[in-house]
Amino acid sequence: MTGFESTDAARTDADRTAAASTRTATVRTTHDDAALVAAALAPDDTESMTTRVDGDAITCEIERAKTGGLNATADDYVVNLHVADRIAERARAHLAAGDSHAETDTEDGTNAADTEDTSNT
Image 1: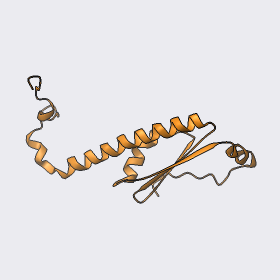
Image 2: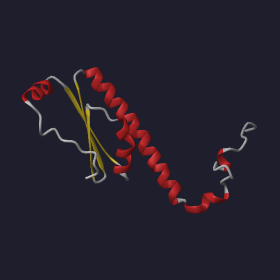
Image 3: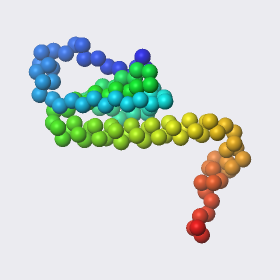
Image 4: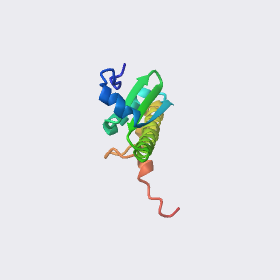
């Protein structure tokens, strides 16, 4: 358990009635480090979202009153998910490279390759 799971076991009859008129979507994705990706997304989670991590999988259930709201929330989630996953991949690649970057780092912490003047290319 990663702390991202929430339950709705205490739903009341009114909650069940309201839920019957809502739209839902479930987004399930797998990642090399699902807990890290879910943690990166957590600050953007809304009350309409329930996110769980199970091994390498993230499951996000979205429940909204209107189809347009569901679409917007799902779209935002998928975009943020893609960004978080790419950042995690880049971090893994950077760490896998080991100390090979030490020769190109400058005193101010930037990478010399990233600060080269390329205006003549």
